Length: 368
Image (cartoon, rainbow, N blue to C red; front, top):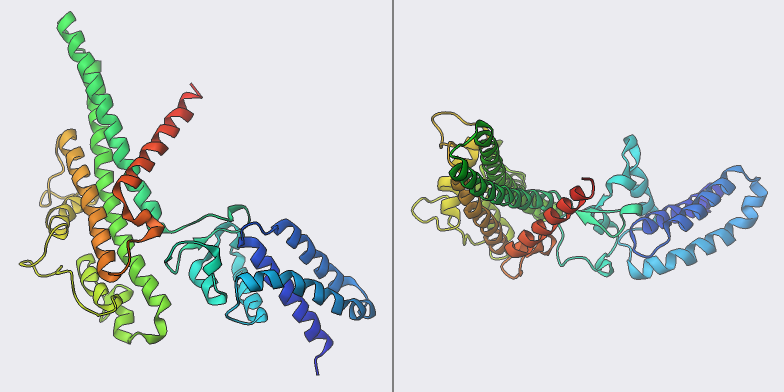
């Protein structure tokens, strides 16, 4: 026998389900759904029992008709009550779900997201924007990749300023036979900016590769948790027998777990077999990156001209993107590339960074 309380809970569950769907489905009117849900909640909470009993069937029919459109487009993998319960649980502990979004992995456990028309693959932890952020999403490695290209573009911007200013200073010096101390200081400051953003470029690109590799491993772990061995699970979390794996080892081991044939197509850890772009990435630029973040006199030197720093930043930017691309292809040989990070198309990301920089300069000029 279905109790009165259970009937009310069933109606609440449908209302909560509608709130979730309205929060992330494009073109769904979240404000309207929210008003309906609040109105129903207030009615069920404050109205006399007899009135609730009388109107409950009609309310349920109305909500089910509203939910039907969502259910047809995004077929549930679990019951509506289970989805509602999981959705409610996300709000516990003061977590601001509407501001922070939900992970694609969590959402894909609840329902079929094929009709959301996103990328052919998304990391488990990719954040889906809600309400005001609806239609947007992101993942940490994408942010780091943008940081990296932004730094490179800034380094190139300041080298251009340095060259222009340097030519003018030379002209003034030849005409006046004088090179002021202030001019030297300004040139030194510009040189520092070039070197600083070049160092940040190398650090950021290295961080991107680390984040990308960790993300691919974590995502595969979450999507395939039930069919992985304990040893594979540990490796995909970046550990082996309780000890942290180095990036080089992760790249070598993850491919053998993730790719369908379990082969090792990238020779990473054998010094005699390692090939480009991995050889330069690990043999030189890893040391340069380490020196940039925690220098000591025994490490790779970082006292270089701004021109040398920028040149190394440019070289490493391409190396890092190639490393990420080759690693992805090794793990997913049938994929054309990770769409969620622009298929690691170097030119695409570089042009986007140039556009961002240009827009920022335009905004700054409006305040002058």
